[in-house]
Amino acid sequence: MVVKKIPITLPFIDQSEVDAVSEVIRSGWLVQGPKTKQFEDLFREFTGSKYAVAVSSCTTGLHLCLEALSIVNTKVIVPAFTFVATANVVEYTNSQVVFCDIDLNTFNIEVNELRNILEKDKSIKAVIPVNLFGLCADLPEIVKIAKDYGIKVIEDCACSFGGYINDIHSGNFGDCGCFSFHPRKAITTGEGGMIVTNDREIYEILIRLRNHGAEVSDYHRHNNQYSFLLPEYNIRGYNYRMTDIQASIGISQLKKADYILKSRSQIVERYVNFFRNNFHKGRSLDSYFRLPLVPSGYRHGYQSFVVLFCMDESLFSSDIDIDAKLEIISRWNVKRNEIMYELEKLGVSTRQGTHSVHTLGYYKRKYGLRPQDFVNSYIADRLSISLPLFPQMTDDEFLFICDSLLKVIKVIV
Image 1 (cartoon, rainbow, N blue to C red):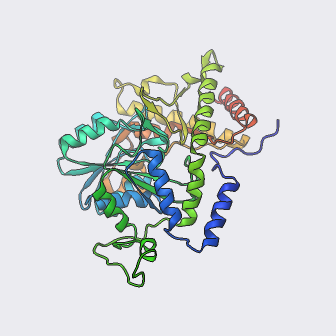
Image 2: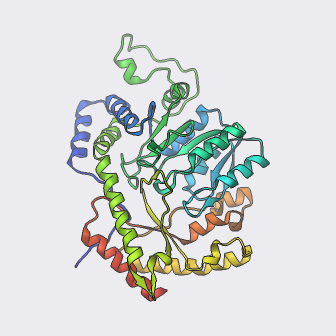
Image 3: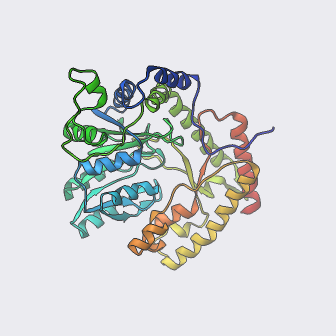
């Protein structure tokens, strides 16, 4: 069996996206026009949200939500294990990032720690829970805590298209939620994002903020009388618009969304069976790797399939001191990196799950943070492995990934 290099992911693109883009280019309306409106309507219907606002990225969407909710010059809680953009948007509003550790079972924000932080600091005005890798955080409890302390909730749904709790789609729990359409996500527009909200007032602020603060959009103005008059600008806004080229791709992607999500879930099921039914040194592979946990009532969107590599269960105990934990992390991080390096040489792409943001240079220096300050996030950073996942993965590719992983484990562990 000859298999070329297997990427970490691939967007599911076919002729329909090519035709859709060609149609937009021929139409002459390229920016925030009829296709953007259609994409918003379809996305709103898919997620069950009342309102949807297309933007240039999930990052700009999060920034707009903070502005729309007047979360500026204050403090905002962010999980310490997330992509750096979640923290960066807080800095955009001249606010202070307050990191919160995660639950290693879900990779999402630890709700007891969230409550402890809010109890100690009453000046915090918002939390941005991240629905990491496609799994919703404990949003019902987070919203309850937020109400207790009078703070806003902005869901970072960058990864959680197709993620549900009890048939409620991610993005519908907080004040608003922001999705990403980067090529690594389940559906893509190249770059681009979408904000959803169920609050009319927030929606009306967002549609102005994304378009320089204009009271009406170009599309609305050009399709009504007095199109020659420029709109009024009563608030300071941004140029965070989505193009109709991007929106046309998004429309095509949404039409295939059920297939894309089902295929990703089926591949994950095959991965789980592989880990549970293959052995090394008399132990199943799921004793070497912690597999993703999906709590009862949750549906995982599986933007990524991320496992945690460590055979030393004492790492997850509260009975050992921090120095011992740091030694275990360092030791198993070396082996984790060896596994990923050997897989790379065989042609299998992997990645660590994401960052422990508090260890990155900017945040480490600005806030004077150490790895052990959010130790679960540090564990996830140093010991997570994301395996290839995309709908068009062939049987040969899947078997090659599994065979390669088993081969590497037998050599390194």
